[in-house]
Length: 475
Image (cartoon, rainbow, N blue to C red):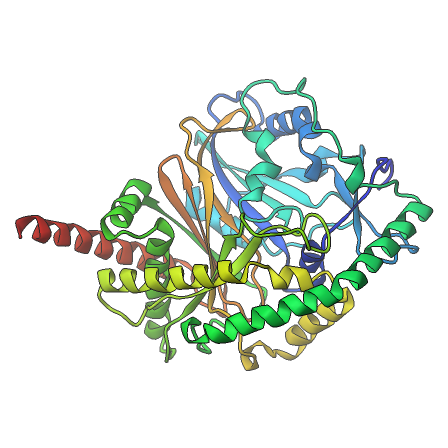
């Protein structure tokens, strides 16, 4: 890349981890599949998107940032803005796979999610999939996970959801205190300053770690034990994706009736669906499955964090109580587990994983995951979870548009990791609860085996909830 912008920003340790953990088969991309109504576009949808993104490019800083890691860099990589962004290289067409429609788009999703982005370019790409005779088109967008994290994705690409002409809207000013000139002297000085800061704060972090470990030991009885299952395997690199939609109003109905959250309802359906899928394939499950659930610690004290931009999102480990057949009893048990996990994390009050990522050498992380991949070691490691289950905020407004086209549905997914199981990603979109199940072929032959059982489990839970309410009113 040429024409580097005047200010560089250092990526945090956690963001850098998303780069370090990449291998041939483990790719750090966030993926989004959006269903758009293209009926208002007379010409080429791809050309329409190129124009709309071009008009908003000054409001999309992640679309113009490129990795910068010169030979004289003594710390983590940096991001620098560039004016040399060829949108025709980043927004391209893709043929619709059979059988077409949302199922065909899901096949494209599965193929695209594992593609490595070119690190010499801004780390994003959008594929446009059209279908002859249909007013719908499908976008599959890749953005590297170091640039987006959970709910922050909407903030990062929010300009694409603003209707009308925004070409005259001023860009956000760059904070000069968190950036520096990408020159040798500035880069080296910033690297030394950050290393000195880490060294100075290391004793405090060690004390915090010991305190936190004591809290963890005191509450260990509430921590679920993750069983080793066929889901905890080394990735093969061949993905399968299935999509399903549940009525959000019905999700809320169950949550209110049972005094739980929508996230608890999701976990109840997902856990039982995963257990049934494993058992029907002849695979054993000797304990309840455990989900890794992203959790935003918005009230956490970050005053002693090593660098800015560490973020507040951490992971809760929640037992999914999938050994309980009764849907209402299972939901109640999950709510208890989830609340205890949340209370324990809030009591800890610190995100140690993100903190220690400021110190872990990148080459050590890369070597670890490459060894796991090369020698198939994931099956011999005790992993913290059997699946990653995310519930993002989504869009609750009527008439959502993307690049001035009505956005009917949206499905997301994060990366797949060796040993961590499939990814189940849900978000509320215009009153629909859009769920994407992304899995490796070693997890399950076809991801729709899981989505079918999620649908089944929710139907059973909704029916049981309504029957319980009828009995309670009758009493």
